[in-house]
Figure 1 (cartoon, rainbow, N blue to C red):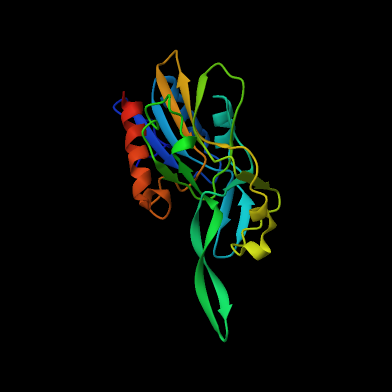
Figure 2: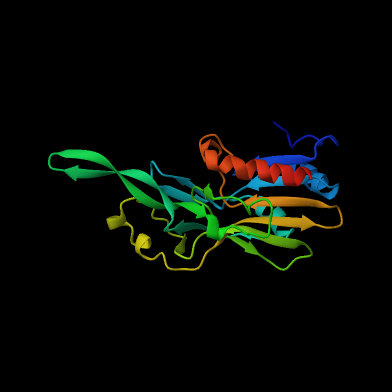
Length: 232
């Protein structure tokens, strides 16, 4: 674990950050900027919406980490991306006098499949699947840096913003019937040429967490590929 409040040692060449929910302090922000400026690499898992499936609540994350990212040409939209290719959750259903859990597709848990990886990038070109939880869409803005999309949702996607209905029951969630938009960028690589370093951004705040994507075996290959790539 690294404390961003303290100056980052020159021995550190890569930082993994997961799910920032508050603004950085002045020291944290400055130390992170200094780390990138001297050629440090960053793997960041971050979305814009904090979610709780148990309570079905969602709220925007307010943090200056988004200003930091925008300075490198990346914007995280304040939305949630839904995909027809998705994981399942248990939904309570009435069966006579009983209520039983029934597994149902939950589009807020996109599964990235082979066709939606960037075949021209070694981090993801040989991957078969990634699993995300409540990701936000990444927008590539004009910048001084070379920005490469790594993977997208499928062409059976949509996004939800402002008013978030997380209900997993398809009969109570009309968004599940509107999965007809083109794929959304959910992972991207920023190449910083003058210092020969990179930032990898995944639009899922729990992608590296033990209670999220970090517990998913398929994701480990991507994480190891990303670290190897950043270490050069």
